[in-house]
Image (tube, each protein chain N blue to C red):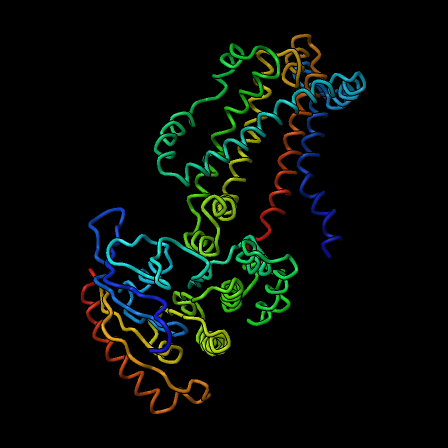
Amino acid sequence: MSGPAQIIVKDVCHHYRPSVGRDVLALENVTLEVPEREFLALLGPSGCGKSTLLYLIGGFLPIETGKILVDGKPVTGPGPDRGIVFQNFALFPWKTVRKNVLYGLERQPLRREEREKRAQAFIDLVGLTGFEESYPSQLSGGMKQRAAIARTLAFDPRMLLMDEPFGALDAQTRSLMQSELLAIWEKTRKTVIFVTHDVHEAVYLAERVAVMSARPGRIKTVVDTRFDKNDPEVHRTKMFVDKVDEVWNLVREEAIKALEKRPS
Amino acid sequence: MTSLAAPRTVVVRYAPLLILALAWEAASRLHLVSSLALPPLTDVAQAWIELVQSGELVTNGLSSLYRAGAGLALAIAIGGALGIVMASSRPVNAMLGPLVELFYPMPKSALIPVTVLWLGFGDGSKILLIFLGCTLPVTIGAYNGARGSDRHLIWSARSMGAHRLRMIWDVVVPSALPELVNGVRTALALSFILLVSSELIVARQGFGYLIGYLGANGSYEAMFAVVLTVAFIGFLFDRAYQSVVERVLRWRE
């Protein structure tokens, strides 16, 4: 393991409480360590609680049992050390791209020009130059997610929590965004926790893939997926294909269990 | 192309109004209806000019607009805040929710004598009545809109360092806006109804007072002139409001 562990999740349980009906155990004794600068994918069948785990780390949901430590400090609520990117982009629809990106900078001790400069730099980084004054409703899905990523990177969080960020995009855009994210990550080297149910995406992006079990969610195994991702033909290498197979076999069992548990 | 089409669409849109005006004039001039019940429109126009020249229409009009404006402004400020707070706080909602449901369907004109008893014949009672009548539609609009706030937007703002109050202002209030403006539009129409009916019953000034006074004196041309003025002002305010709303909500697709 390189560097100090930045995120520690220990024995965390979580109940989902629907407004009608009984409580459902969503997470059971989840334990996970994510070292500084690591790109970790959280992979699992739908309904396994992977997004819930991410929201707990983000401080958006209360922790019932167990603990979550970020840099040794227990999580008590959301904070700008943990930037979040959602599947539905969560851009403020009443703000332009520029104002969205500026939002996280407004509460930082920066001069106005510096904020503007910084916002512009991240808009340029994600390739949205020329769309600064557009509203989110005027952008395509891929552009919205670029804007959301720029907004989160701009306030310089220590880690990125990404909740199926490319799940709403078409196949071509998704593959493009994946390589761009990898390039950005290599430049900024932030700790990333990336929630997905796409095995290819997880193996391609992450250094380690944490496979979760069907509900109640637990960390089933953590698979090392470190190899040279810069090879444009990486998807065809034997190493990549074997890794995908290995991870896919782990997930398949859980996906079948999840299907069997689903009320028909 | 739009600049060529625009005047034509305006003509087409208001053609029914012109036809109605001509029919009115004809019906009265040809004695199809009694000119007491429906004085010719040209006579009404004549009376309107006299009312403007004497200053009666302007003084009474300004007095009415002041009452409606003050009542409505209070209703929007307090009603909007109430709806947002109710949506943001469970205890407040538990306290006020049933009260809102109870008072919403009540006909507010029933409060005319009550507000007069409390605040007398002047501006105060009208402003209070309009405030009471217009608050709840705004509250309900703000509440429904605020309740629909996307939790991911709330979380985004919180993760970018916004504390709770700041988040409410930055996320919940704009999320409530599209529904809030519908509530305000209802309130705008209600304020005119309450204004004129309260002035008709007890007042010494205002559009409603003028209508009642002219009617009682048999000056029907002048009475119609005031009625049409009120209708036109209501229409104008609604249109102006709509165009302001369009501009404020231009971020929507």
